[in-house]
Length: 136
Picture 1 (tube, rainbow, N blue to C red):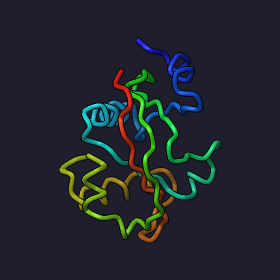
Picture 2: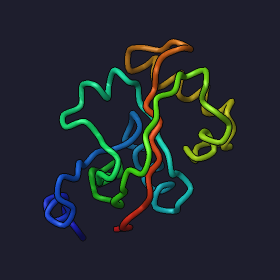
Picture 3: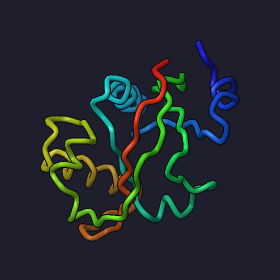
């Protein structure tokens, strides 16, 4: 099994992190990514502005499951600024969660952003799309 340290040597500059807000969700999302169902994600512009180093197109990410075990490596292929209220059905489907509908995406992301401290219908998000480079 590849460790984060070994993967960071193979993918210089890679960041290692979990998606979601619980170990259970992190494992579920990592599995969706490994299966090629989840090919996109988003976060608030505010949270991106606080990241060091800031994500950039072409960068690698080591996606961890709920037990902090590397599940796969992705490469960021696109980023764009979009307001929450302007997220499309197509992007919601690429997020790969629930029934893949925009309604499900809106409900779950409103819950997530509210739990993490800030939600508004016109909040700015960074919408990312990625590709799986390696399944571990």
